[in-house]
Image 1 (cartoon, rainbow, N blue to C red):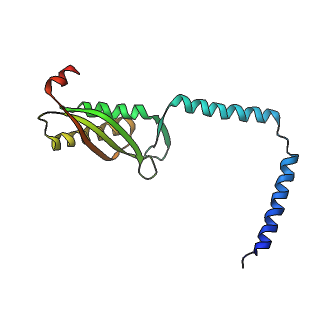
Image 2: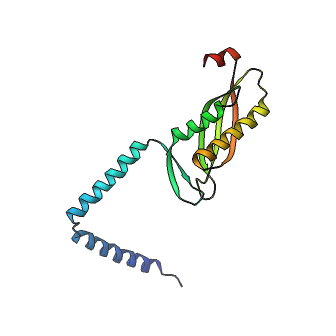
Image 3: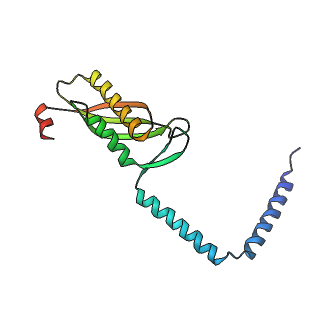
Length: 159
């Protein structure tokens, strides 16, 4: 049988009184406060130094963080290794179970005029999947590719 509203209110008021009394009498140890404050600042500084990070998980369930720019770089190099394709934008989204044990990749590419899309897209998917597994040990669950632009062969020679 549940407690009545009056009983819940009375219990709540009683517990709040105990907490308020404790907090009024509580005096933290100055040495512990300094150490805690320094640890908080250290965490904030480490976070700032890492820049935006992608949180992933190893096959053994151990979480790790890697700079989002590094993940994008791995994917870009894999895309650019495919003849007739250039990476434009890359988004990596941690997925899998546990979260971060795999990654979904969404990318836009530019394609050289005359390149046949379907075989090139399959080659891009294979190249990206292989690079992620080789460099991060993380499989790609999904690799979505959108052609955003077409370039002429002479543009490819210019870089």
